[in-house]
Length: 133
Length: 133
DNA sequence: TTCTAATTAAGAATGATTATCCGAAAGAGG
DNA sequence: CCTCTTTCGGATAATCATTCTTAATTAGAA
Ligand SMILES: [Mn+2]
Ligand SMILES: [Mn+2]
Ligand SMILES: [Zn+2]
Ligand SMILES: [Zn+2]
Image (cartoon, rainbow over all chains, first blue to last red; front, side, top):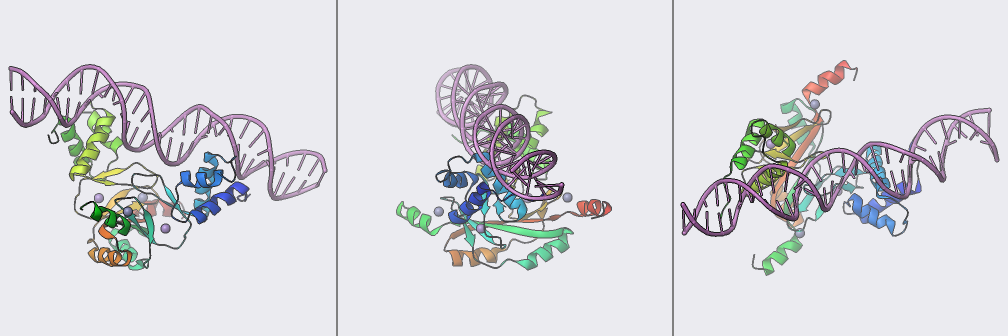
């Protein structure tokens, strides 16, 4: 009656963990297919979503791009480079207090919040500098 | 040599302004097509993106749904109801200081940040209560 | 008014994701 | 083990959001 722990399911979560930096479904598929050529893209999507439902992965929506999957379960924020699209974790504490504040002002039963920072990553700053900003 | 101020462009920005609550391209199209049946969906998409480039609109990406368009240009935050999907503005000041803080720790040249809160709206709280939470 | 680059409508194409189908495999129970 | 029930996988069609292509039209400069 529960979820079956199939080899495909194991491969999917392992791929998200080894790829580390918020891979897309496509990237997860490409990672798995070299070792296990029979897997189908539909299975990757199905398992990714199932793992998100089960709470073993998080899904992160990114503007102008495919959804990304995150194996880090602790609440944390992200930063996106506006130049190269790199999507990375931000190492800072979760702002509990603003959830309370916004719950009060909006009367919502607050769940959580996401923050996405946007800017130019150090690598791109270098490159842009050399091209005469 | 610049952007031409076509009737379609005017209709698109007017629609985003009258629809108020972060309409999708589809909703903008549906709004316009009743008055101006000849407009095509491609034109709506093209003008929406062009208006975003020009800085007259903002685009907001939402998980599991089409992009939304915002005619409010001041930086502000959003809250999404996890039950009904309502997507609304949050009335609080922009947190300038965390941009500085994260710029320091990440060495990014910081641009801005978005916050999306998630919770259950007052209306849905009522409904869920009546169904015996 | 004339000229031309920008824009349009229509629909094809694309990219991401989900749904459908049907056979295979797993688990429960005897 | 054998059987029944259910979940799952692979293939592929379908859907959804968005962009691209093309030939015709038009806004706005000269
Ligand atoms: Mn992360
Ligand atoms: Mn808004
Ligand atoms: Zn970068
Ligand atoms: Zn709601």
